[in-house]
Length: 328
Image 1 (spheres, rainbow, N blue to C red):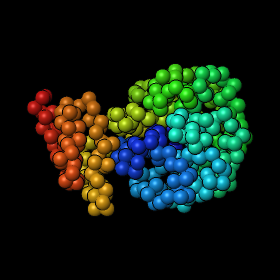
Image 2: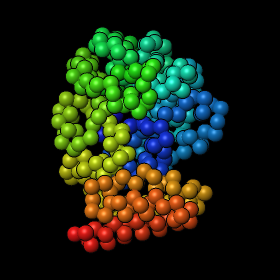
Image 3: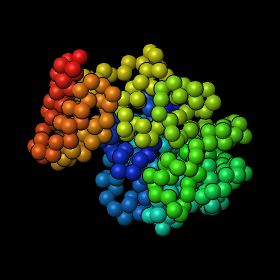
Image 4: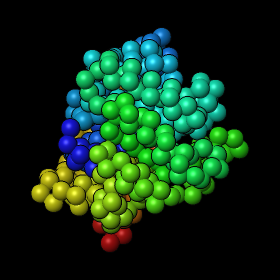
């Protein structure tokens, strides 16, 4: 796949990037690469596969992120991912949560590069789509470049050529997952050293990216950027970045996106999906616009959400437009 396929990515976020969120993000960013929440091998091999892997074709290209540390289980999970139509299998080597650590995967895998290499190789042997790795710069308070260089080098030896670098360390003891997204310092310079040392690789930068102009600058140094919480708190940035990256690209206007989401929500409600699950990724979309508080208030109103009427999205948009005209 061309490097440009990873130029704009939306990060895998637990309890955030479900299929409804990804459908919405696709409307905002037609060429972005979207990632699932991290799905454990146990959930796929011992649970309901369709519940975890089903997605709308409109979401593509979409990558499946896996959590696990057993090569055979990861290989079988990757095989399922390809069968369900995913475009990429990504191995999580960056999540620092205690629950993930108890399962011996996520960020703690960075301490075992040989095992990660075995896992990546097993997945590569099982599928024909790209197998990629998302990782941190280091563990706890070890800031040495050699640690991450040797980790990437070991995986590079398997033939893996796409690395998503969250440019912070993961502190495994003493920091919550939220703190791990904010407190360890960002070190873009170290991520740039990885790009310099592995020039044949696609290096995607993740961590702390919040602005359109910032993205434009970073794309001069890296092959791609990955947005996480910024895409959740202010989804409109995805449209802004898309327009900046691709001036000739037609990005839908808000009114068109509203109508598309009304239609999508209607279909999903008929399948038994609660409206509240569909609209939660939309709450921050109007941030910074006149009337935004009315948009959020309408889509957060439990009494109206409980009616499971997709037209609530349309009413929220009408309220925003009306209030904006009054405030203007």
